[in-house]
Length: 444
Image (cartoon, rainbow, N blue to C red; front, side, top):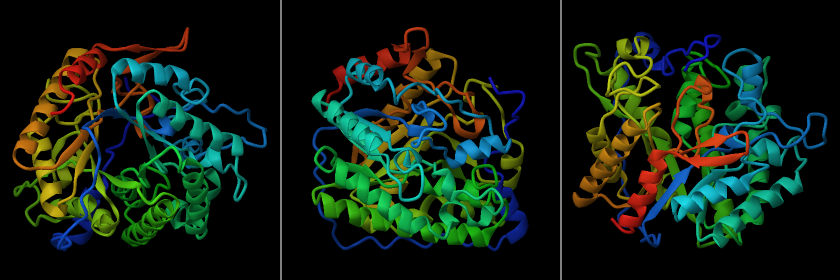
């Protein structure tokens, strides 16, 4: 249920603004020039797993006033009244990671993607929390001991609050003058500590979506609205940070697998509502611009797919809310399994690199609907594989029902839910289905 105090804005308002501002002058992205040959990537057996994000799951785990107390830009953004607050407890995945591990073992996954909270590791500029770093290392070691390959995301939307300037949003986060230097130091510390235990790294999760929503759409931090110059500059910085992190990680562990993860909706042309194709072209830029500039550094492309949508100004302004019909989610997203096949095909044809489905899921209160969603999307993934798309894994979103960013606790994506009385994760029917599905399909 949506919080009555925080009505959700159209999350991607920027395409409508773009259509008005640019009046059809948005050109389609140029084709990507693939290298003549790419080095084969050895990923082992098919990855059956799940994904989470640190901010959505980790409780604070440290008292305010402590030398290790920290906030993120999202915490401050909530304090400013722009989004619902997450609260300090989330799903207790920091102080009680053992319950998450137990659920992962019960599900039978062989890979698990989790995030590092930069602010936790570096609560003040240049001041590192060695105990927090050690705990992240232990999480990776515990996963390995359980036969689960850890996948580490170094940035999943959140920045330390000291990179966020409430008084000058144009110098916040990717636009903070010191962000690149700080990032290099943070990545070096984490890559050094994790090198013996982690082979697979995600430098940035969905930078394409974050950049467009935060630096043009105005609904995510730093909250800049209709600022194409800021979007361009932030994208340049994000690309540089990604490339730097890939080089740093490989210097610590040469056999690493670098994965770039992107949110790729299936955008449909609407010639009536978008006659110049300005909105559609802008959405194609959102899909590809960042990835085009780092694809040569990645070994595997992570695809996060949830929905299809007409690319038109009207569709962004008049957005469905809730499960109004059987083919919509709690987020108002249109369920379209065949769009998943289209996205996987587009990504593979453009880049020719192995793909892992790093997020795919549905916010719904109906477990039957959730199971049907997973079954139909896995079938479309298999169809794409039969058509020649090189898919190496499937990690549905997400392990636990949790905080859904600007929508707060408004959507039930989890394979499990948290029983707060005994701090135990209870497997939902969809989780039981996934468990049995993995057992029956060790290699698709």
